[in-house]
Length: 346
Image (cartoon, rainbow, N blue to C red; front, top):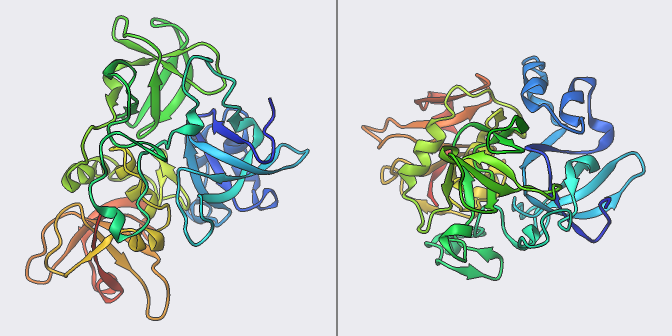
């Protein structure tokens, strides 16, 4: 069923790109627009300037729910990404344009499975400092908390490798490649020979994932250093404006994705992330906390993850760096220190 305004849909491809407008896409973007997008090839084909084109807003991972608000006959749909809070843009998520071919109706799946649009793909959202307390275990109005719900056999799983492939049969060829870190999958039965059947939007039959590539969604809120360790695995990944996958990522996408791996939803953009976390005094920050940056009189434009305790006024962070176009770990240079707003804790 084609996406319809006012209805929910779910992402059926490993990574779907959310655009500012259909007219904003460039010829170089064709691999990301295909019915089966090749995000890695898209990124590899861009030059330094094209990597930071402002036509990209964010990216959505397999299974993420959206609310459709408008459709066009040329295959574009305007949606709200419900798993990526953006308070300044809308109350319920990040708005933008997707290709309709990248979406599936929630009903186009195993009818015995739970409706994926009833589940937050990354757990409880943090909308302000008061929300930064540890999330309760169990089910709340927005869906499962970090522990999810139900028995261990059907508890949500999370991809814990940079990329994995899903197969039509346990020993078969790959049917869906490029599934990335932080993707949430719902098990469809017990493992067989090291493969686990999982439900995939847009497919009636389960696909099979390598069991070692998956971990259960955590039952408890993680220590910030564990989140930092996930982000560290993305060191040297290419910087892409609006990127939110292990093919390419931006500064706030790195923070969002690292926490998402542990079942916690932070807002998508850096300024909203600052508003959703709690400020801590400088020199009291710990690894896994966040540094935010802004120029005088301007809103926050950059975020990094504290990677070491401060020493003698010297600070280090891991961040997706616009200047180097890579995820790097470094001491804050003078120009960064000059724009440091403060340290914050999730």
